[in-house]
Every structure is written in structure tokens, then in C-alpha cells.
Image (cartoon, rainbow, N blue to C red; front, top):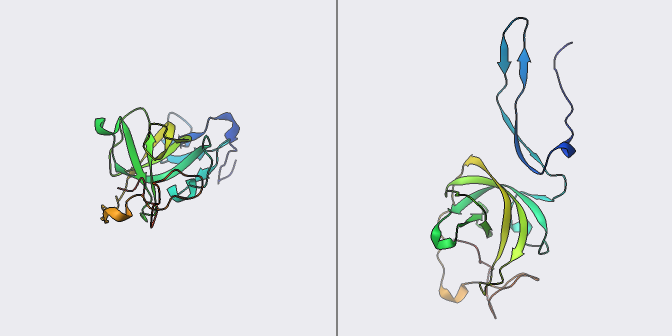
Length: 173
């Protein structure tokens, strides 16, 4: 055989999610060498997005994958074990409900179903079935605004505050 070596991998053999791929080379004798691991994402049955803003147009109950987004507020008991992710541009953010703790300042890939909160809190969220830590992330600074602008005008199909004015900002921290 000659280099470069390659293999074909069919994504249908794995569930949606993030996996580590690493090559193994065996030489004559007991020598073994490993490549640096690389993350790969399988998204067989779910649309994939790279920003929270893109998720806003999706219908409730849509299963999706949101790739490499910074966590701006980590898991805490005050938020019932949920955490918040937000686009680096600060355009929009969303609550993520998941099992397990996630710290602020990390970048995550989230797989889950888009839901509408029925508890009276006017907020959409992702009910996560998978959360993968992708490493450290820069967290956007806090946003200051007058109470008059709190909530903003909700996009079509999204719950919001009555007579909201300005930029929709539910989920931004």
C-alpha cells in the first residue's frame, strides 16, 4: 500500500453526536503509532446549526444539533439544572435543559428538541439529549439595557412579552 492512507466511514452506523476519531498505525514488530484525535459530528437525522439565531425559525418539537456555541451561564440550582448558550455576536441566546453540569466559559455542541416553556415563563429552550464539551470559549460580556426594552418584540411563532418593543432579547444574559 502507498500513502496517503484513507478509509471510508458511513455516518449511518452511528447515532447523531460528537465522536473522537483517531488513526492507529501498526509497524512491523510491536511498534504502534497514534494520530492526534479529531472531533467529528454525525448529523444523520437532524438539521445542524452553528448559531442560536438560526434556531429561532425552527418549529417547536424540531430535533436539532447546535455546534460549538459558548456557555454564558453555567448549570446551577437556581436555574433548575439548566444553562444558557449565546452567540458570540450576542444576537441571541437560549436556555438548554440537560442532565449533568456545564460550566460557563466552555464551548458546547448540543443535540436536542426545541420546546416552548409551558410554565408561564415566556421562553423557548432546547431539551438536550446530548451535550459535548468542545473546549474553552470566550464569553460575551453582560448586556445592559433599560427595563423599557426588556423582552423586545418576539419573532413570529415565538412567545414574547405583550407589546414588546425593540430587539428580541429573551435568553440573553
